[in-house]
Image (cartoon, rainbow, N blue to C red; front, side):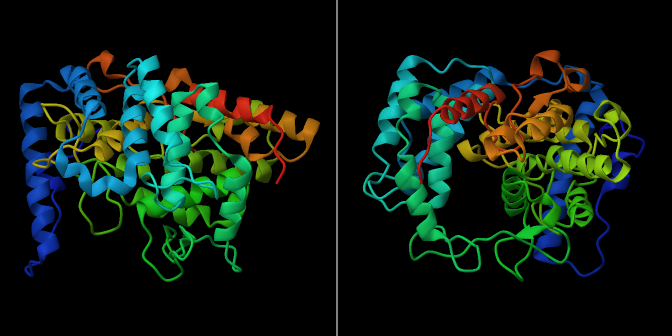
Length: 408
């Protein structure tokens, strides 16, 4: 549907605040005004169909970063795998060639971060940490070569992860670190620990993990869907990470990517309930579960920096994190990536319960439902809704490791 040419005038979409101003309500009003001004200009010029993704500027921003970072990035010294993942994933999404030189440099960099006791650290000599290990593995998937894959010491990685597992089933982030179990909260979202506020990033990680494990039936899916749907902003069109917070471009993926997974789960439940045939899926698929066009309006009009890179909201500076997740959200809103229920059923009959790798390979793009706002050249590549890595890279890595026996 979209917001700019939607049925409701932009002026009627502002939040209705009471007479008691707070810092958060003031910031919300300021943010809405910034987005409103940008949207109004586009509407007055009738230029929505000509909105452009500044692809070359974003590619230059990232490739310049890969050549060397400004000294202020020293604050991310413990996040080298994240920087590699964010930048390389952007190049993949934008269709830019990841050269052999970049692959070799990536392999060399990541190889220096793996510890002999298992897992990856944020920098050479730093302790292994679950979050940067995730980023390192995603980077290896994007590099996509045998040399890169063979970097992973799977046996020690597994042993290290099992050391992190707690008696209640949760994992700590590193030895001696904090618990992070991504529990479902009373409002349907997912938070870090019992009693903590639900959060868009935690919700994605929690739902994706449950889908990988094949245990989504343990979640209250209707309440999670209601919670996620409530986070798309009326005026801005982007997502907030928690209720009563400001819009942020990164949640275009963290929250936006919940919906293809929720669609698959809801369709699966409907099939089970109605004992329907897989070929009758069209009447059950709930897409669109969110306003894909509105999200693209926010990303393309309010989140692009004219010098390259993307931002969380207007008047902010770009960074590699937001560039990665804004473009990942753009991909999620453009492409309709769905779960192959018919193939899943046949594989279940043939092999029994599917493992995580098999389930990851069951996602494919329905090319009849691509939606691209503005110039047709704005399209980016499809990202996997569970792993947030380009679809072909996920397939290649899973198929590589399924041929290599693993002994734990």
